[in-house]
Image 1: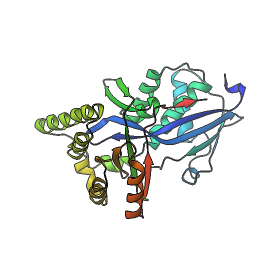
Image 2: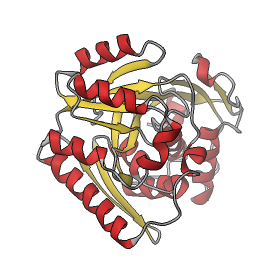
Image 3: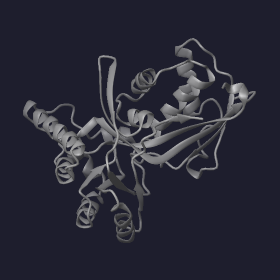
Length: 299
């Protein structure tokens, strides 16, 4: 199937990164989606009925188009212009991987329209080079929980399926740009703190894989990499954390750079947790999310 055969759809899940101590390394794909309906056109055109996306560029300056054109150029290809209907239920600048999903969508667009024949590893490296770390893009690409490392121009990632937890995202109305949230982080950690932070992340992975939820929650709470510096930017964090844990959440962590707070619970307990959080924090949106195990898809 090619672009000449008619419309095609690209669907990319949202993601949450870090899960506490897994800074720039651990990500999970979420059941929120960016969708592109694409067809051949005489010029580049992007449009959307999503309120949040209406003010974004409607021509080739659109971020997704830019990623697609850059990707194709890297392989010496020119893309035929497309008309793209963009829809998304991923809130922008809320720590839910909206930029990472757009990067993956752009790469998938270039691969399909340009017939580049990219492998998943190719897509992973391209997206990681753009994003700077593999947690969000890896989750959106592969689905599931991903653990990745990006060093010296090489990226390695392990996707994990079969985990049985749910999440309630507590999403404020206010946005928080990643660059602002990164600006509060230290430039270095002492050797002893780095060892402690790394061991916490290691135990988090082991706890998640063995479904030791209480231990996983404990590791989320004692992160040293980023949450101690970012929590002051999220004034409601402490209140949400205490309440969610009193209502059955086994762990609470910033979603990516924030300001969304992710409350983790065992499978089947998310709906009640969502309802209780929403009624207690009516000025924010509580949204029950599951793990997406499909990753990005073109059909």
